[in-house]
Length: 465
Ligand code: C5P
Ligand code: C5P
Picture (cartoon, rainbow, N blue to C red):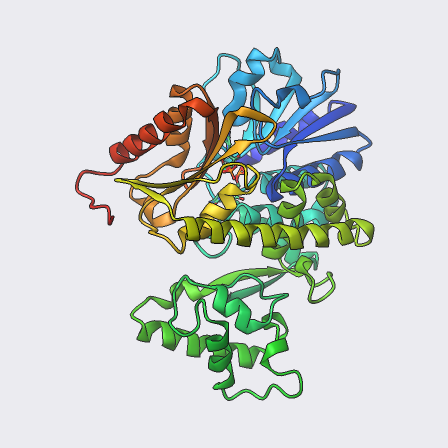
């Protein structure tokens, strides 16, 4: 059976139930998935109740209502099947829609999982969209949310664009007019909302001396271009709004600068997904920034607000989300600075830091991912924090790069193994993973993570310390 057969089977099963509870993850992908599923099922007159959970684990499983509704777990569940078993769920009680590695389990819980079909660049919102389209072709109006989930979960990062079945979703959005695609666009965050020189200065992959980490330098670079900016000046210029010819000129100059610096210009380019129906200069204009809005809501305990944004609320919910976005960005900036100022501790194969109770567990992974681009990218980073609601527990997040993953490093298996051995549980992806562990086993956990990394590195590979 291929992915389309699994999608059909999941649609047939879920449509059999008059009442469904969707239990979804609080990140951008989880929120986009929940919105797609709940709109698609609601349109079929199924009663839907949604519950968002920070992560499925023994501490949070009680948040799943114990009622007779059919349970659909989205963006987690594949890696927590033994927890379902221990919590008394039977095979027919639930359906899993997920893109995480599946855990062996004695009960064959049913799941729609792209990994079963070797599709690695697809998020749960992508799967939820394909399911919604299977239920009713008119659900193509939800394609942009499938793209937001995919982009939010970094599915476009390695190839600088969506690939495989995730591309079909883009094509659906283009044909229904909700998505416009820009090929070979500038690979910078904030191209729809930030002044261009700020975008350029925040980008350090590839690093361009005089532009990266240097807003004034970036401004000077732009002013040297032979482009008439009229009244507004470069300080107010947004990349998305610039004429094609001007964008081309700037791209060529950036390519030149990158080559002069001895770096490949490939990563300067990416494919962008824009949402022309959204108001200009708002973060809802493109998939990357839309995903940050959802993350800001979810990771700061307002996932339902993110859900309202997905459903089209541009009033009260959007105003609330804007505030959360500002807070999200400023706390992450602060966390990034904290990591850089404090410095990481080094092990042979690992760099790690503990942030105590200064930052919430929901964002430490994001901060670590950002810090990694300014630290030694060859070494995976492990960040830990205390859980305020349970001082006996520690949250751990790890991040690495595609290059390190391509050398054989798999953070998912390392976190799952080290956590299990030290009395916790974890999982995720090869490139990004998380775990909850007992606080008193932190030191053992770090030692094990470092050892497991060492085992995964092929003996011939030298780690640059
Ligand atoms: O479940 P999960 O897929 O929800 O995790 C998503 C988070 O993991 C993203 O917000 C991102 O921080 C990180 N991630 C990443 N690169 C990937 C996949 C996930 O950095 N390829
Ligand atoms: O929480 P964090 O952003 O570090 O999560 C990174 C990835 O690890 C996500 O895909 C998340 O779903 C996964 N994760 C997990 N089990 C945990 C914590 C995180 O599978 N206990």
